[in-house]
Image 1 (tube, rainbow, N blue to C red):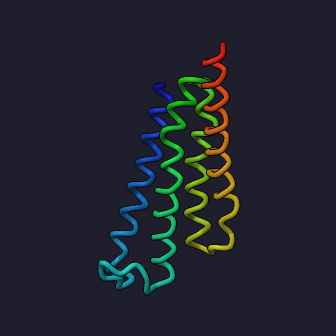
Image 2 (cartoon, one colour):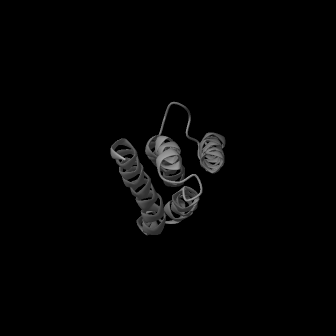
Length: 128
C-alpha cells in the first residue's frame, strides 16, 4: 500500500502544480475571476487542470484497490505511467491541443488497467 500512497501523493503534487499554474497565470493572461475564457493559452492550462481532476477521480481509489487486491508492487507500473501521461498531456496540450494524444493514451489506459485489474482482483478474492 505504501507504493500506491506514494504515487497518489506524487499525482496530487502534480495536480497542485497544475492548479497553481492556472491561478498564477490569471494576471499574465488578464483572466479576471470568475472568467474561464479569454486567452487561448490560459484556457489550455485550465483544461489541463480540469481534465486531470476528472482523471484523478478514477485514479485514486483504483490505485488503492489495485494495491490491495492485485499487487502492492505492480501498482507502480500503471501509477507511474499515469503521472508521466499527465505531464506529457499537459506539455503537449498547452503547446498544441491536437498533439495531446500520447499523454491522453498513457493516463487513460493506466486508469483502465487499474479499474479492470482491481475488478478482477476483487472478484478473485471473493470467489477464492
